[in-house]
Image 1 (cartoon, rainbow, N blue to C red):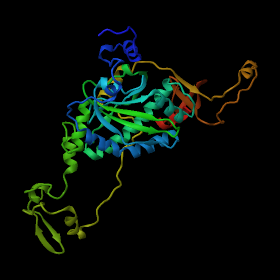
Image 2 (cartoon, one colour; image 1 turned 180 degrees about the horizontal axis):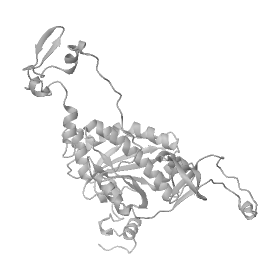
Image 3 (spheres, one colour; image 1 turned 120 degrees about the vertical axis):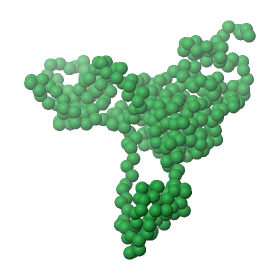
Image 4 (cartoon, rainbow, N blue to C red; image 1 turned 30 degrees about the horizontal axis):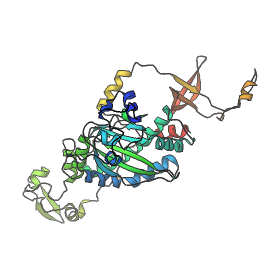
Length: 397
């Protein structure tokens, strides 16, 4: 088809990103057709995904409120099946894409897409800085937001599916034209959230699952399991009652020929089946054997980075790369006239109190704190604290 020679913004973005613009919708296409998701025949259950991700929105809202210090409301998502072209037609020209792919459990593509304005609004709230540019620091902030969201979802997903091996890669964020976003191939699942940051402006988040993880997750949520979570799901769903149908205690417990004394009455264990005998009734009949040892459940710390075997192997490839490490005693701000008026003997007051730990930075990123020591007439720093991701975010403000 011949055109008038003018290129749309989407086609310009596609050319800059090296994407075939012929696969993109022509600007003369009807708006109603562009806005509608593709009708596709997919293997995943979009309703099961919608119901699950809707149950996590309250927890995600609370996390975002804690990170931003604002009253945040995340709506239950609108879930649909899309392909690349149908999703691009709904995205704004510039987006912040964050890859948080699942590396185990339900491996595959997992991507969050923020409109550029929404990414700026979130980063500004977290850093307490208005009109923040979407630079490396802002991308780190958005990556931390996604990390918290994914951690919350994985906790709930583990509980719903029984899959205890779900791990996601550390999120990586970048701002780009929408045509440059690395969307999954073929058909995929999309959860679109409306986000209220209390600033009076509408915001959106698109959460994208590739076909493989979307299918595995929906199967796991329906109890169908998957090649990745069949064993954990089976283990979780087996109760004590009927755990070994048709098997006697001698087979399940390895206590052939043993007897158990109950109030002076000897009861043979051989041939005594567990089927139909629940745990509660069993413990009730053994009241004289002593109380159960109850311990508090210990949950893993979601703030700690989790590396799968693939990431751990990749780290070995960069062990010989050198990075700049600096120690910062303190900072201050001065007017230009004050800086020009400096001379020998000028005392500059810093924002640190005497005796406070100094900051240790790698490539200008805060990673630890320490105390100054002297080693053979040279200054050194003894590390006293490794900074958590939340503290890194707070120090960016």
